[in-house]
Image (tube, rainbow, N blue to C red; front, top):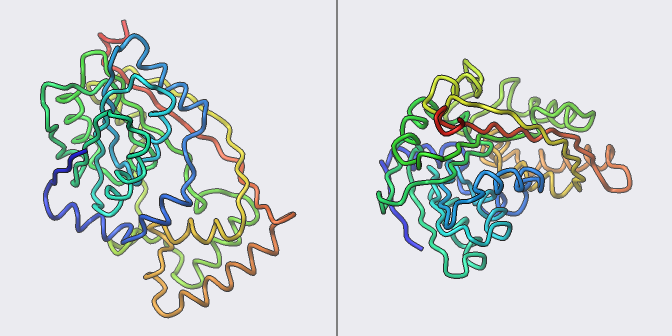
Amino acid sequence: MTSSSGEPAAAALGEALFGTTAVDYSRYRPGIPDPAVRLLAATLHGVPAPALLDLGTGTGQVPRALLPALPRLARVDLVDVNPAMLDQAMSDLQPLLEGRTATAFAGAAHTFTPQQPEVRADLITCCRAFHWMDRPAVLEMADQVAAPHAVVAVMGDGSLWTHTADWTTALKELIQTYLGESRRAGTTGTYTQPARSYEDDLAASPFSDVREYRFPVTRAWRPESVIGYLRSTSFARPDHFADRHPAFEAEARDLLAAYAKGGILREDAVFTVLTARRPKAAS
């Protein structure tokens, strides 16, 4: 397991977006649904010792799901702007590697350079992070490091900010009473929706053969796990609230307890996976 670093400004951005929330991120962020894991594994059919490049890895949810499901996965490269997240990811992955290679690159995704340029990525993934990136530049980089048959998979399922259940709507309104109407984006300001869809980003890239897969997901949250999740987000991390954070968490616990049924808060989401290949690879 080895590490390398990109430009210092990327680390500052990682700190600005998510601060030092790696432990909460690892513990409370939802993992990758099993059907999506099977889809990703299937893209590597026939590749004897595949290499995975996971962009915006956070604490490594994608490789944590794929390593047990795909024993022949030989190499994992993790990329994130937040060094603390990468440290947590490398620690979490250690028991799963069983002799396989893992490297960490701290920097913006589009600046990634492989430590072994001769090893080409067979699968490039980006989960719940593509919106933070310079997407055309990321896809140009991917074209340089990907094997001819490689698949790029962009995936996600929104967040509790975007979910529209009664309890998430009430929780969002509570956050807004403390922080204002606009969604925070760490200490960088407020969040701006990407100007074009991920499908259009991919279609304009060398990986223009795009397919969409949608997997319904039902999650059962407990109030305390929602509180932990919020601490890991760019929109409700504790330092946004300063000395009012204890008061916010107390109100949030009361709100969530009022909505919970049998101690459970239900989230019905859709996990979407976009797979993209170079056109000649799809033929």
